Amino acid sequence: MVELKLVLSNPADGKSKTVTVADAQAQSFIGLRIKDEFNADAYGFPGQMAMITGGSDKSGIPLRGDIPGGAKRRILLAGPPGYKPKNDGERRRKLVRGSMITEDIVQINATLLKSEQAGKTS
Image (tube, one colour):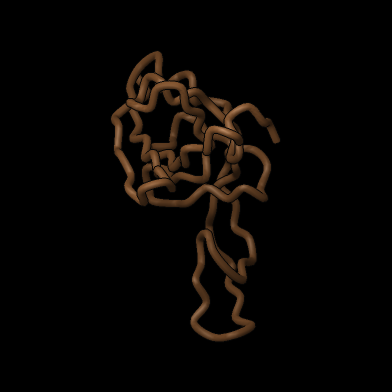
């Protein structure tokens, strides 16, 4: 049984809504990647599309859109997500996940798209 939290941000009013998704609805997210779009009808936003912007796994490790796959990797980071440097030019090797959503993900962050962007795909 896959259960996750979907955090939908609405840029129009600056608010977000958290929805717990389980079973068949949660399985529909498995295999999607960051920047993929999905229909937000079932989550309280009829007629709107949403785009996945990030997430984290059960250990709090963030997803990164520039890493393929869904596995954990230790990479050298100079900025977010996954690392916020204290000084200019500072870099650190940190553990992050790839951009694909797997069964280990517990939170997915998404943003509602404006109606004129809803028909476009990237």
